[in-house]
Image 1 (cartoon, rainbow, N blue to C red):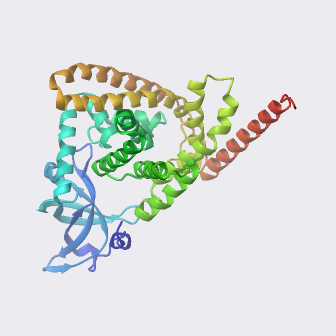
Image 2 (cartoon, rainbow, N blue to C red; image 1 turned 135 degrees about the vertical axis):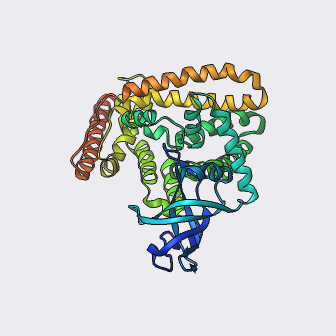
Amino acid sequence: MTARSLAAAKFYPGIPIQTISGISGLLLDDPRTFLNRSGTARLDVTGVSASGGIRAVPSGTVTVFFPEHSMPQLKEFGKNSRIYAEGRFFGADQKGIQRFEARTVYITDRPATVYRIRNTVRIEILERFSPYPWGSLAAALLLGVRDDLDRTIQNNYRDAGVSHVLALSGMHLAVISGLIAFLLSKPLGLKRAGITGAVLIGAYIFLVGPQPSLLRAAIMYFIGTAALLTGVSKESLPVLSAAFLIQLALQPAQGDEVSFILSYLALAGILVISPAFLSLCRGRIPEFLSQPLAASVGAFIATCPVVCAFFGVLRPAGIAAGLVIVPLSTVFMVGALVWLAVSFLIPPAGPVLGIILSVLYDCLGWVVSFAARFPGWEPPGLTAGIGLTLGSVLFIAAAYFQNYRSRMRFVPFN
């Protein structure tokens, strides 16, 4: 983020905001569509106009809501386009970002060449997915585009406690980086594969956008690659801490976003809480099940206070549901990537793989729908969430310590 964008996080119009009838600026996002086919995106405002020919050069960011008829053109030109919109302001959101309701929208300048290529690739991928029932889920998992994903499906993921699966994050990047490592490690060697993977992941972030949890995972991958090349140790917690500082330096505005906070807390919980829980499971639960269970428990406990504060409901069923939904979603993602490659290289083979994706899609839908039936728990405020987290951590720590002492009693002395 540039110094200008940091200073211009809030909107300073230069003239009374109620008099403004038109704004112009640069689209900062890929326009997102609502159920009624209208849409929204953030605009870096470079000019405003009011009745009587009054003009001003403001600074800041505005959230613009677009009418349905303007969305096809906006999506065609996409992010980094310059637009002029006529309409009115109707107040600020919870973060103080001003909202503008557009009636008429004009594209005043195309995006830069690199963004035109990017937008063309995105549109091509989305158009290839669109004819298939499973295509909307593939678009959500691979590109973070949930415009066409059925609202019932989104609600089921939320009620099942696994809505994080639909938000691009470390899980999704792990699938992509795993495929890169699998395909490139042998022909290129470990170090060259790491460098190539870093370049490809950078291109992927550019394609889908620097979403907080995804950017966190990418920065950690870059740090890991640098450690591999230099021979420096890459302990997980120091890498996570370094990624936190780097991401705040690059995108300071993300620091107060819920997804940013949850992303770091969840991974910190996995790194700090999960090992103790895993030691308690050892010998009692099969290892193939205990490791993902420990990760789910660690992430759930660490994020409790924030979830309570922002959403008001905890969904413990997500701990168990994730053990099935995350692996199924991973297989679905890999299948969608393979289908995408096949659809370009060997089009006749696409329908065969599409049948497998349809089966996976139906299985995911059934599991998520079943898990969504379990009720959530509405704790009485943030204090309950903090108490639950501290209590859970203390309980696991005490159990781990007791288990450790029990094992030490039987260690023979030489």
